[in-house]
Image 1: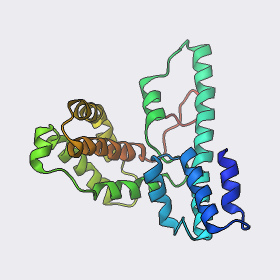
Image 2 (image 1 turned 180 degrees about the vertical axis):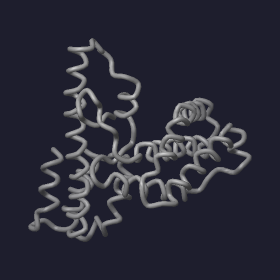
Image 3 (image 1 turned 90 degrees about the vertical axis):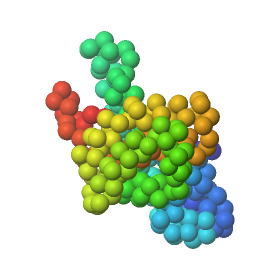
Length: 221
C-alpha cells in the first residue's frame, strides 16, 4: 500500500490505537530519511507513537513535511538535470549531485532539529576501546569528527564551519567505513566508522540556507 493510504489510516479515529500505530510504522518503512530505526527514534520525541493517537498524528505530520519537501527537491533536481543534459550535454550527475542524492538528510523545515537531535543521540552511543580504534586506524578520524560535532552541538543553530570541515573529511570517512567492513575488524570499529561517517553527513548537510545558483535562481544541492 502507498504512503498516502497508511497516512489516512493513522488519522482514522475509527481504528484502534494499535492499528493506527502499525499504519505509522508502515509509513516509516516507505519514507525513512535516517533509516527505519532512527527515523522512528526521532518521531518518538513527539510522544508515544505506538499507543497515543495524538502523538501518532503529530509524528505523521512531521514525516509528511519532510516527504513533501523531498518530493519538491527531486522534482527540481529532475528539472535541472533535464536542462543540463539538453543545454550542457552533461549526461551524468556531478559528484556533488551524487553525494546530495545519497546523503542521509531530513528535508524540510525540521531539518536542523532532526539532524541535531540525531547527531546528539549518535554521539552518546558506546564507542570501541582506544586500542580497537587504533587497530582500525580510526583514532585520528574519531578525534577530528568529534571536535566538529562538539562545536556543532554547542549552539542551537547550523554551524557552517563545522559543516565545511566535516565535508572535507567525508572521503576519508567513507573509505574508512568501507575498509573496516572489508577487513572484518569486528562489529565495534566497523559500526563506529559508519557512525562517524553518518554524523559527519548530518552536520555537513545542516549548513544553513544554500546560496542560489546564478543560472537558475534556485538553491543548489
